[in-house]
Amino acid sequence: MPELPEVEVVRAGLAPAVAGALISGVSVFDERALTRHPGTGLDFEAALTGRSIRAAVRRGKFLWLPLESAAGEPASEAIVGHLGMSGQLLLREPGAPAERHERVRIDLQHPVHGDLAVVFADQRTFGSLAIDPLVQTMDAAAGGFGSPDPVMPVQVAHIARDPLDPAFDDAGFRRALSRKDSAIKRVLLDQTVVSGIGNIYADEALWGARIHPETSASALSTRAVNRLLAEVRAVLDKALAEGGTSFDAQYVNVNGQAGYFAHSLHAYGRTGQPCDRCGRPIVRVSFMNRSSHFCPYCQKLRR
DNA sequence: GAAAATACCTGTTTGC
DNA sequence: TGCAAACAGGTATTTT
Image (tube, rainbow, N blue to C red; front, side, top):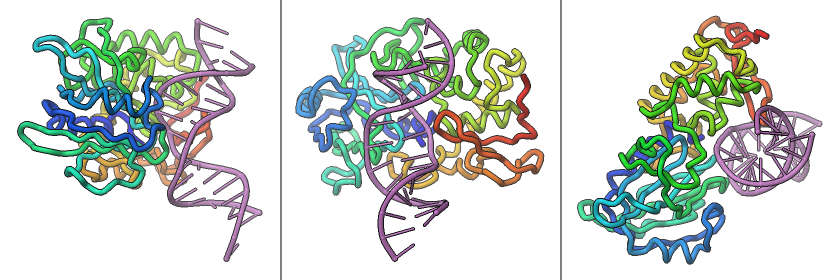
């Protein structure tokens, strides 16, 4: 499922194609793709046609495309997107046949690359696109990866920075954990504490740091939190280098290709298979209406 | 006010 | 064989 590395692969693929491009047409095929857009599909189409995109920016799992404004001025609006569980953003030739589950198509004219189409396809319709105003960041640092502007969409403002963001506050993260009585895995998935981590990378980072997923966050020592943060960064970096995690056709880059990180997983989806450290079987438990995978020997629960 | 539970969604897999 | 239940898990909202 798209977590930070997968969304970053999409952002990086999109950026050179959309930056500087003029929106020549927009087609909304399913308004469920606009659940976070305040207006209708017609409004979405009309508001975007004729405008230009400046960049492709990402924080955590949120992606946004700032729209042009006066020269030298920071953009004041953006198309903000979230892939949800199964969303895809694909680059296609103009007039390309409709993708399965295609919800929105944005036709572009790029001064260098010519005409192309950005297709938003989404099987489970948890993903969405919207037009959203941009607001200043609290710390005056860049709003996300892909643009130096210290702004972000309103819908992203409550989301914490992600662990790969240079402005991520390590000390603030340690303080937040010390105040949380919830299980550490639940806290890792809380995007207001740290963004970009989903079920797969939470399981992987906890396995790497040898921490049981149900350990209380506030019970972790500073040393353990530092180890965990280092593992989070290591697993996200490695997944990014391998093009993300793909189990099926649900996650692909802008050209429809799968990533390779699924081959590097140590815990997620490995129920019953031997732990890569100690050889004992990985177990799966139900947790927050989803699955947690871990090694009960390497990741003991201490109270 | 924090933490936990639930709603939303559809294609595929599993189990009886 | 066929159907129903389980499963996948993002975020926002509701309940505890």
